Image 1 (cartoon, one colour):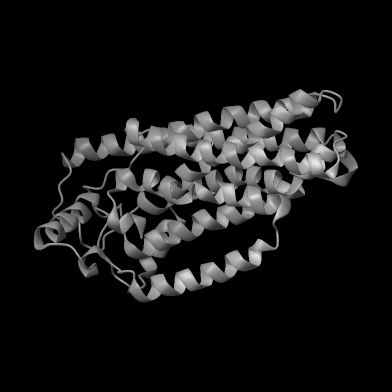
Image 2 (image 1 turned 180 degrees about the vertical axis):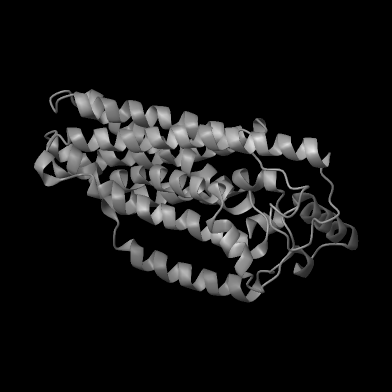
Length: 317
């Protein structure tokens, strides 16, 4: 939906504005208000029902816009060069997506960044207890994790607004604090509480990379069926990362979990390398299109063409 109402370059900042509250709510609920999951779930069901019945499918269906504003919204959609809405399933677009290195690059980025989510969500209290803190102190030490995650998301969205074509650079740079934090947790003993706590907090910055992955997976592709495949792949990667992260932590390595944090560091090293490699290949592709087909136009902006078919499509970097 964000991709329909925002320009492609604004998709990630818009996603950051929508997503920043999630780590904050997780921070509160995971510590001392787990029963509120029930109330939150009920509210989510009611809210999604309201959106389903009232939220417009496309900008053209939205109420409250003047004719001039509707025209501007249509021009924005054309400028995206990502195609209009076409609910007909197209098998060739599915095949094209599955054979596209761009798709698998985003899958790898989503999976590796979200290994941090699985670790922070599942092992915070366990790590703090292993350092000698009681249950109440462990819950208190969990509180800054959500605040740091929120800050990371908002800073990531701001940088995307301020620096054009910086998405993959932001993902790569976001890996550094996570890798440093993993290094501290890997090498420092449990008696060095301050260093290990700081290291664990640094893992929270994975959110800055993840929010960029959402933008890449939903707005950096054209073709209605192909976009759906990319969005699904992005969230499959999210799920895989949340599964893989906790599995790295074997009971044999408790309470220090040194090899586990080494494994997490390797995951983010892969993320760093993949982000820069993907950016290099997409830059080359944009340059090739400029050289072979000239400057992009919007003549096919509303047609259901994939990014390979529409030679005016340019990848956001």
